[in-house]
Length: 244
Image 1 (cartoon, rainbow, N blue to C red):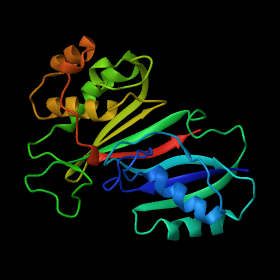
Image 2 (image 1 turned 45 degrees about the horizontal axis):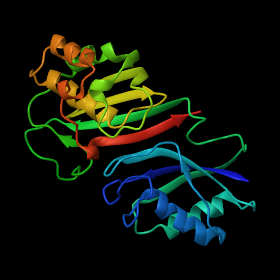
Image 3 (image 1 turned 60 degrees about the vertical axis):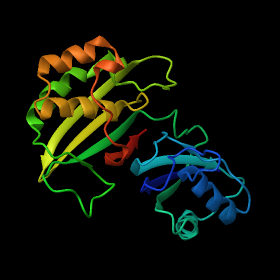
């Protein structure tokens, strides 16, 4: 049987999704719980690898098991077993053995949250990027539309990226202000390493007036990471959902 899990987690205490020797990861936390619940080890395959400190509301993963178990009871067991780690299994479903959490994905959605206030966050600490200078979200939205479609995104590609090509297709970027918070939503089938965080760092340069629209375009078209803005902090980023 192939099982599909929808998972949310606070990335603060983890080295990221993927297992790493000697460091706590979301993948290993769940695999340890599954081993106890199912009484045999399984390999959990995630739809994407979130970095240290990155959060998720809709991470998807799958695993295979010989037996068929009640998904409601399995979810309840896992959520008890992972405590006190900040991980929650939202749903468990049976899927076809042709389903693959990573390779069957048609679109992934990320959200980046910026608290744009003079005062620092208290309740939202490690949940948002605190940016103290005023940001113009309308200008940010306008320049962001340059990135829609298929482009060489080398300017937003971090060192160590294992993708074979810097060419990626961005389906949609929406930047809105919700009270004191600016939210950057980006939709695409796949992403380069640190792509969202590097895009956000460059957009913030426009929003605060450091860059003009022409500056952003020049940096983007240079296809050179050294021309881009800073990498936005990991704790403002959320893996929201996957469409299959």
